[in-house]
Image 1 (tube, rainbow, N blue to C red):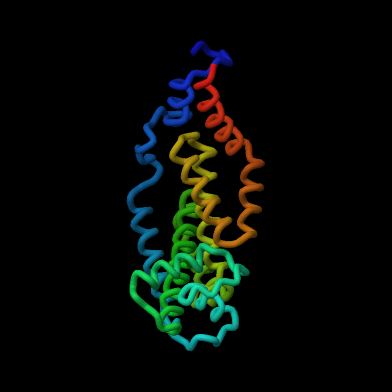
Image 2: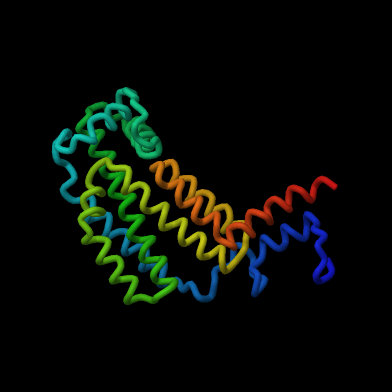
Length: 233
């Protein structure tokens, strides 16, 4: 395709999406600025956060008024649809897979899942800060997140806010990568994170509106549209 030409072909657009804008790297090539120790640190942060959020989560059902209707929906299918489905449905699937029928045991399973979501959020914060500010700021952000009462408390029981947070952070990472490398993998991942954020809590839809106003997101969406339009002369 000549420089400056406005004609698009299926092969040309897909080649543009599957390679980086600056280096021509493949979708599956790990960036040289993304060292392996960063991933090791992310795993360690996740493990520490999971241990802290999992501890002392076996308190009696009903201590928080928000848990009984959620766990009844997950175990007894007593639906009220006042709560987002991602948390309830995930808990329901895991409880069924484990063969749990007791409400107290089931809610402890749900709390463990919430602890996992909180740990993913902290690890994602570490990852995001590490990529943009370095190790010391990333560690400070993790410490602040781990000691924030709002996150630490919500990660100990069935609360949809702690399910929303990790997907918001992951969507931010996804957009950050998309702004640098307009590749199909980044586009797909960003869509997944935004979709999970919306399904975890209704307020997650505001993130899709915000990111949709960004130039990189608009350009990526237009590239996908061009791919499909190119099939129809």
